[in-house]
Amino acid sequence: MHFLKSIVASLLLFSTFAFAGDTSPPSPRDTELEKAKSAIARKDWAGAQAVLEPYTVNNPRSADGFNLLGYSLRNQKKYDESLLAYKQALTLDPKHRGAHEYIGIAYVQMGQLDKAREHLASLDKICTFSCEEYRDLKKAIAEAK
Image (cartoon, rainbow, N blue to C red; front, side, top):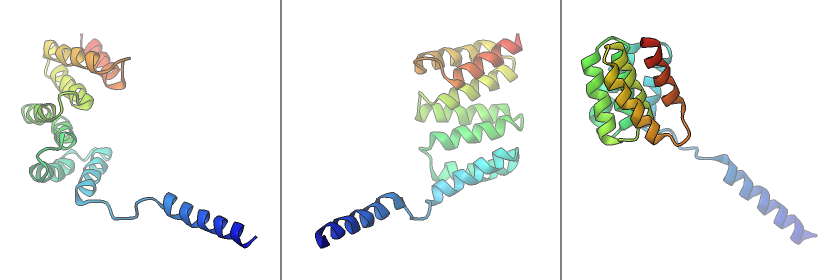
């Protein structure tokens, strides 16, 4: 009986550690992206930009950072700057679905539907069986006609 209690106690101890998860604090990188996402959720485009510009300088290989920076700039109608950020995201990750969608929407907003369609075609290749980014860009292009 003592042996059985030891096994149960060991299993409970193991499960406590196994399911406790990583209790380490988030990295500064994660914290900065979360601050930017929070600003974006509040539609505080300038606030997100203020976080993402230094973030992308300090994390020059973050396609997500450049994509979110482009998104923040586009929503401030700073199209040329947003295109640069999206292009950097796509240079870092040519299959970044969000960057393809958002740069396509920027092109729609700029009246350049041919360029938007190029990114729709890229999404068609990247997304095996359609994806939200493909559907959203396709809808934006159709509504612009």
